[in-house]
Image (cartoon, rainbow, N blue to C red; front, top):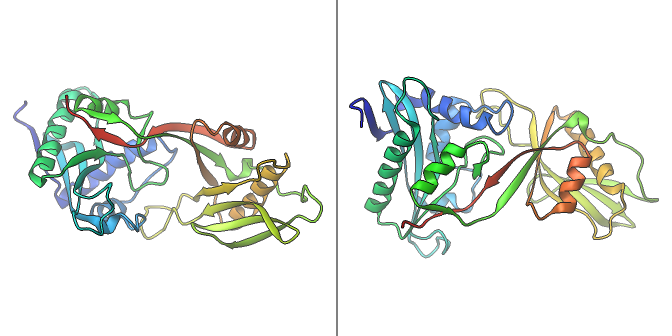
Length: 306
């Protein structure tokens, strides 16, 4: 190991370099993705979006690898408590919230060497914590960046070399420009009306026929809070979408047209959507109505050392 290569805890003066490392990884997944320094720092202390699991965390630490004054890798570790109120799947476990490192670059030590050095330090920390199992994810404080996306083969390789196995599901991430969604139009069914309410996760736009909601799309427009981000990127996501089993072929584009109208009024210009590879009908509908596939991301990694 070069004498100038050092694994150590994150220091506040590392904040600009750490933010750059986070944004480089995020921007490879989401075009134009950016988080402010304050957003990154806040995410090291808590994750307010995880209202159920975040309170279960009893310890957090961030490790960095420094080479000649440059931060070339970093990892955020979480320790979940063992109290009875902690969910059984999380109780007494350790998680890599994210693990990032620069790929090979001229004048730098090998990426594998850096990654393996940091990973060894992470596993040693888990050992000191005495966790019963180890898991990994890639959730950054940027909308749509979680798991291990296809754009991070260097991260995937580092996890696999250390004995982490992808045991969860794969999710497909889509992005549409709001202007590319179907234009608002007349209702495709006689008597169909639109009803906007507050849903479980965001603004719910429902298709109502004979006083019954037969379909809806739910939009989360709070992804970009100005106080947490360097700039508002005007992004929202489809947090829920329900269509009848035998939908009218024009129902989905009509709902998307209603969503387009509402998002345009609010200044949102991009919309994320998610699916699993087996949801072929939903994927076909998204691709046909303005969405394009951004990436596939592997969620749920478990440590199974050889």
